[in-house]
Length: 322
Image 1 (spheres, helix red, strand yellow):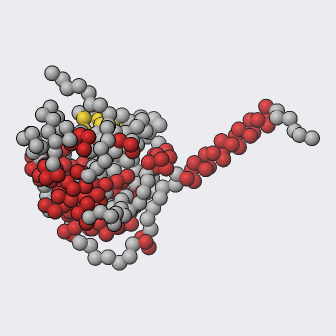
Image 2: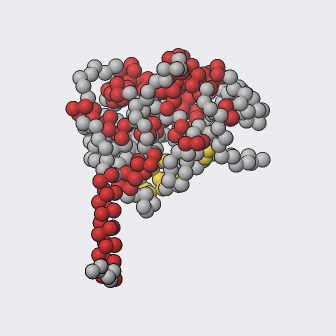
Image 3: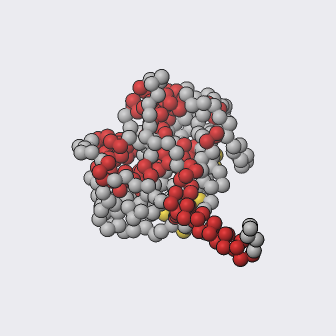
């Protein structure tokens, strides 16, 4: 005979279902890691590491802040920059080679794991304010070169304050679910139908340059809206608006409605002046400080790729105050 579903049986079934669901969630959200055995012998290229450092904008976030931006030493990666966002406030950590407060005790595998999988050496998920969603597309050699270069910089003592996030965003394990939704793709794969310059630009923009992290709108969970990637949106810190850099935006720029040319993009990445004769400000001015240190061929490659992005209509910016 079929047993009746009594309240007691229903309660037991509910508890068992909850336990099974929690166990499944716990398993699928285990932080991923890269083992040391996966890293073959390698001789770092420090010059390339410096290039990755510059295009990656490491100093823009991790350099010790100063009230006078001109006094910021881009080699002192002691962190401390405060980044407000809809989920609370992030404080950028110390990634200098300091053995106590920085990443001086990190292994190479720890560093690769952080950039590719967003996992800290203690086995916890890192918050995607650190743009590992883009860094995971970097080539292994470039990640290793970057780590080697950072180790040549001065150690900085001092551990910045921790993040101040609202519940439930302060529960790191939940980031495993976020990663299941938004941490996609692996290492960059060149498109054989495209030129070497285009592929270099695509790699720099989508990987170490992490341009989409700021130039794309995000949903309520903080994931990039893929259908509007590079189409602009609110600045991550809530201050201002990041422009659309697809042809939809670059073809009709600002109040003067000026259309950018490919060479204008390359020039802008060097000196920060746009086709209307105005200079970049805010966070983009810091980006220019980094891209201006790249070789001209890399700036040209970035421009070549951005100029060929598919046109996309992003969210409408707020009306300008008069």
